[in-house]
Length: 355
Image (cartoon, rainbow, N blue to C red; front, side):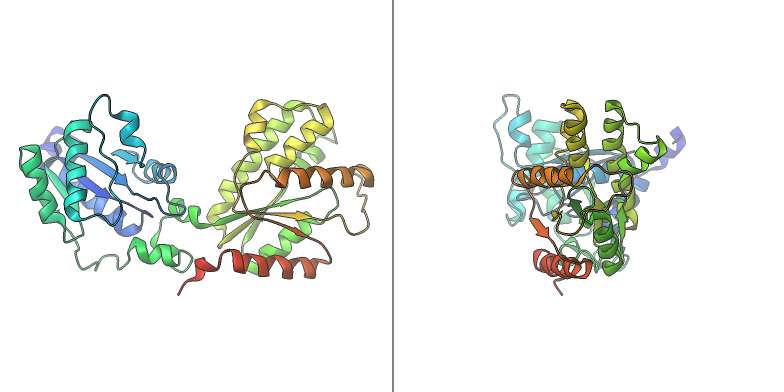
């Protein structure tokens, strides 16, 4: 931006505040319009309690992806305590607190913590005028209210509507945001336990995509030779492919293995594991499916003996006890497994389809 362009803009520092849970295209339009009128833009986001799949870390990722050029601060309920520096603590107000409580907190945050006085606050809500008035009084300098698209003609959507049915309303979110509402389901199990077949069948049922097992791909490329260093590469690449596949997923993303599987192979092959791989193995999923070894073992030339499959299954049974997501063990034919899983998921994620 040239100096003439800066001079031509109406405000120095602009402010946009919200829960952004989730950040939707209406929010993005407001931020873009505010940026056109300001030399600098400050975006503040807080919610208490936070909403499912819209936590502070996730919102930070959204803003980093969508608005890296603007100053953004996303805080959670513990943030004021962590940064108070001797200043009296004010808790993040509850989401249903009065406008007055919200405005008092915002004034304190700007004046005592951030030491920032905006020239204008931009919003699409009726409270904009009273908020600007309260900020003007508390900060000792005029803060102008710029109310834009109050009737939501530009983007007729709200974060509440999206949270009620994120899959029906996904078109109102950028891909980086919509990714957070895709359920990543990991399939676990020993060799020749039907993971890949089930992942493909589930993806077909839900008209979505699934992530193939990169470790097997690399094993074949290297003619069955695998080093300890390769396993860390596998862990990172498996995650990268999951993140990439989220952009094409429809409600569910089925993952044929995870870094936990790679951790297992590190232990089975080398008797130890890299701490970085151990950390990758804690990757969270919305749910896990453990495939039982209840059909004849198929030796395709890349697998070990049937006894090893049983050893793996026993190990996975131990691991799922520590997982922080719902876990389902499935057996039987492919059709039986698909029926069991789809019934389970429909119950598990029934809230996603709220009318």
